[in-house]
Length: 134
Image (tube, rainbow, N blue to C red):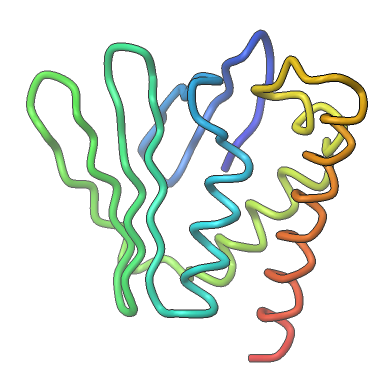
């Protein structure tokens, strides 16, 4: 789902949708929070800035959408996808390269990067635990 973390940009791919979010938003944290919120409360949302365009991931109890905002808003419907599987895919994407994702949009000190990594690990563990329980 998210990959190619390089120079403050990354790729976001869901089905036939492709976006390129920048470091202006906390892509890995925001994405994991959206899935955690969905798993614990039934809804989640994550907004991505592409510096000139944007898109929003919206997760409801029964649907998943991307609202793409370029020239005109476009709604992409991914309601047929399994949201728990997507949550675990996001976890795998972050976890497999967690050190690099810990530096995605931070110019913090080493201590700040460690704190960011701990937050990523905490979100990953919450998502895994909830997916395992249900």
